[in-house]
Image (cartoon, rainbow, N blue to C red; front, top):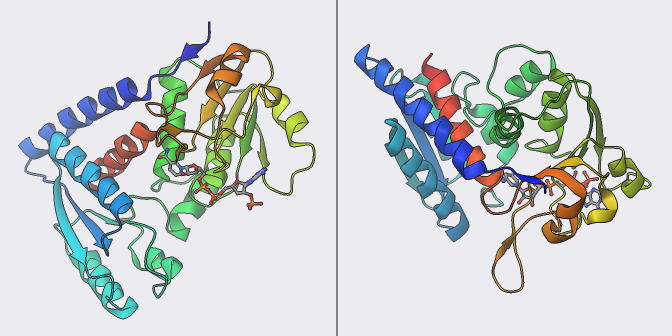
Length: 278
Ligand code: NDP
């Protein structure tokens, strides 16, 4: 029977640990504040933003909500971020993505001070990750490392295949696994013989953005399978990039969707907020 990695339980454990740390910081007179900026009122973004606010409340972090009109100009948004960069009592700045088409996301990400970049998307944060220096790490990949470690899964020396090379998941995931001494392959849409490549993996991480694409044919017997994808199927139920039922009999451990990687992203965001003040 494969081990089902319980992201909900692990994220709850991390949030409890953070709550304790925040209480200690408060006792030392240090209060953490996170500025959460949402442009427009896309319902999916509103759900994510609300979940982040709730997590802040639970842990004891003050969240400052900036709910901006969809029509806000890029210049106005840049000015707001620059003001928040200067404020000593704001430790983290988060801009909920995606942004409306008239705003350049890259420019906005670069405007956030790397010292407050709790999402870990700033080029300086990504560069620091690449060369092994201190900096904020993108939350979803950081959460996956925690899932593996806290589930007792050895990473060092293992063959790891990451499917997907996005800047927020695939690439930082590959670098983090390398930092943990795995032997890493990053596959993408131009990879030839994807099934054979995936079958080499002791740890297979699917961040491909295609519902249930990864079937048992992609999985080596006994592999650990991490499913980053989040989709709604035809019955409006959540599913991942991995065909769970088909893969489960082949693997030694697997993350479900929901309840696997998803809850870890917010837990690691909270972790970055706590680090921002430390
Ligand atoms: P992107 O769409 O940015 O990247 C998808 C990657 O998959 C690309 O690198 C693409 O390759 C590759 N790809 C697409 N099709 C194939 C294919 N047929 N074969 C091999 N590779 C392919 O997605 P993200 O990285 O942002 O997200 C991935 C998934 O994770 C999504 O389902 C997303 O919803 C989910 N997600 C979940 C989070 C969570 O908290 N659980 C957080 C963030 C994302 P190429 O570069 O060549 O185009």
